[in-house]
Length: 103
Image (cartoon, rainbow, N blue to C red):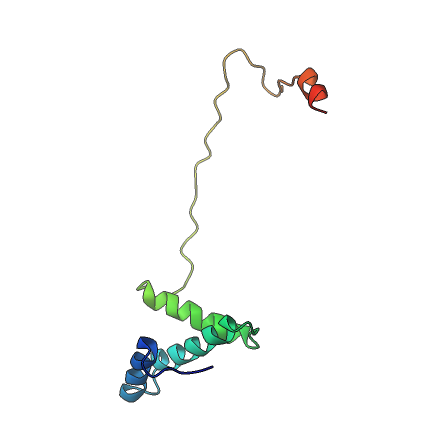
């Protein structure tokens, strides 16, 4: 990986590292830059568990979510299907002549 000191990501990451080198934000962003360069170069990731944890934290912060806990179950009322007039329940209208012509 080549680091370009003029790239906006590197400039901002450097500022983060100077201001708060031990913060989760600084560490996650440094790793995400590395992760992205690794995957972009065609390599596979050896530490998928930590990579996905960083991605989830980054998405959580980006979407301003207080946490990633599941919400309560949502219950839906089942709607009854309306039958068309003149059709018997449970029957299927099938044209065998059309099917045999297509075969």
